[in-house]
Image 1 (tube, one colour):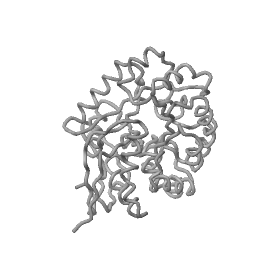
Image 2 (cartoon, helix red, strand yellow):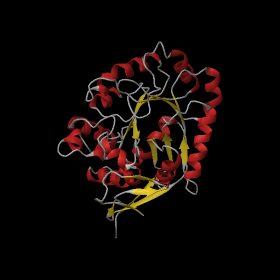
Image 3 (cartoon, helix red, strand yellow):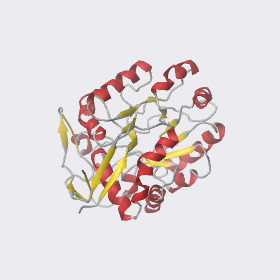
Image 4 (spheres, helix red, strand yellow):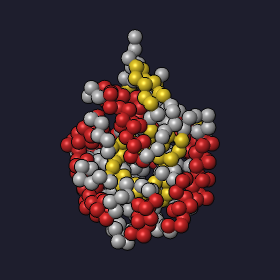
Length: 337
């Protein structure tokens, strides 16, 4: 008899769904197997108003209709009044801060990140219990950008001790180590950063479908992330940072940054955790930790995986859009039942 594992309300706490036809294509590839996902607000233009937020949520629900799935909405960080935040508080799960120009569609991000200049908005968020989600990179040398951002995280954590701060898609041992220093720091970890290093991206022939930002780092960084995930560290949770781009934008001289993992995330995580004799901790990483960190109750949704071979499609395409997944055309050990 095939080996099985049932996941209870799996969650993706960092997801790009894009919009329009791409949303129609990729939305159901998450909503089919996840009970909920924290959706990034870096559209063009970014989500900064209540009207834009509710409209985007409506489009997501329409794209994912028929599935048991809840999109957790976020605003793009800018200077917000306390009155506005009080009005929108029940519609959002957090506010996402992007350093200006550091990643896809972040041109309208924050130019200077320091506690003093951001104090009015961050104090209001702290008082209202709205978490701050942060893309933590400087504009320095690409391999050092996250490490250079650590003092900024420390400054924010010290200045706003009641503010929950989520270090998004961490990629370094430095970030994992920082979690132990401050009670209000938490983190998401992607699937691909648990598996690949920069060597996989550019050590031989360039692999465009593994190119992402933050860029994959060194072996010791990957191993530190993996240890945090498989041991059930309560301060880390799964956030895929699954970022769809059309094939022609990935396989080009100006390769877009982003790895598309939504349709294979659960299967690959099951294989990874099984390899390290840690399947008992998979539900914490995929669901329980996020519910505790963000203080919510996920929709009930059980997903069963079975130890049967699954071949990843070469490409997903519909509605005039297409996207190539990580591990396209390769065989995985686990399938969704």
